[in-house]
Image (cartoon, rainbow over all chains, first blue to last red; front, side, top):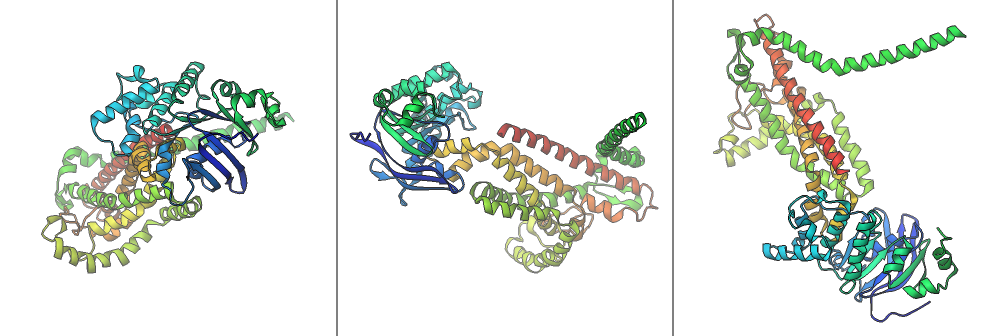
Length: 256
Length: 311
């Protein structure tokens, strides 16, 4: 079960997350490989979203959450007291379940991150906006209405806009939280296609409750159950030869 | 048995009619009051059109001159000063409560602020008379006239402390609860996912608030301010007790002012033997009613839409 990864980008060590007195993540330790798609799977309420969001310290936005343990990113503990949380989040981007375009134009959504980090010149911003909208596969659909409000887009387009917005700050990691669950099948397919292309440059961690999606996309799989890490390993190993009875039961559709 | 059935049905039907009727009475009351005011103000409006009443500055009832302009300016001066004093601290408080304060603090502070709204306005008037007016008279007026007296707006021709500034301060405190609680509500209506999106891009909390939350909540914040404005505009008792009530156009924040509500409250029922006096006061009441009504309706509509679109 302990398949060591060469050169892990993220190392989660003894991580616990509690909402009040309720332990949502229980002593999880796992390494996450660079430039691959890692899928976190498991039944609802197993803590997969909490685990994902803990990596860029987004769990702590909820009142009454406590996190202890370590998450090393590039060797540095993101929970160390002297760490600048905005720097962590800049390098570890998030694509959420539902698209939340910011209340501004399409252009300003993509330029939002770069502007936070001081990019001001028009030409530089224009270049970033075009590059990332192309990377997200949205450019051709919006190039003539960049200054229209982002809410005028369809949900599927909004999700690709959110992807472009996330890429524009040049993160190393993309956290994807059930990113296709609110989308129609064609939009979902587009997003999946983008993710496969993006993994050459980014480390992608994907939470999904759709097993087929995990089979299609994942290089590496983490299986969670009731807040605990049950099994992890390369995708073919987990899907073809699951070791743990719970993993086998879940893959067989017998565990909810 | 059959009799019993009929009685039950009768009671049921009449209960519905009574309650429905009462609802209609409440709903049409505003219109009825407006029409009654109009009817009573008509004798004056026949002689002098509303436009000239609103713009004339001469208030000498004995000579049949009823110019509302000084009162309108007085009301606006006190109200605008109150908004100027109230809006910045209210917005910051609302932002703090909605975005920074831990839930437990918010839950204990909000009721405390709401209690401010329940204090009778005569109590604010007494507080104004006993505290605000003396502080303005003894400290603010001398200091400001020494340092800024060369600016007409800060000239201290009236050393009593009763005036626009005292009214503005008292009114500002009175509109705190409405502006704070409505603003806090519209800010909290901004979806969590939108805040998270900004934070996940590496925005600091303040950057997130400034560029996302306030932008999204802006219509609602404007509505909160307008609601506060219409509340302040119609306030009578507290203002009447501290503004000095002189029928002249205030030129400086220390000058006395006379507001429309104070004019009506002070004079209605007295000196009614003067011809047209009561028509003039009711015309003033009509103007007040219309202005407050318009502002309140606008604010409610904007607010309802803001909350709907934010959610």
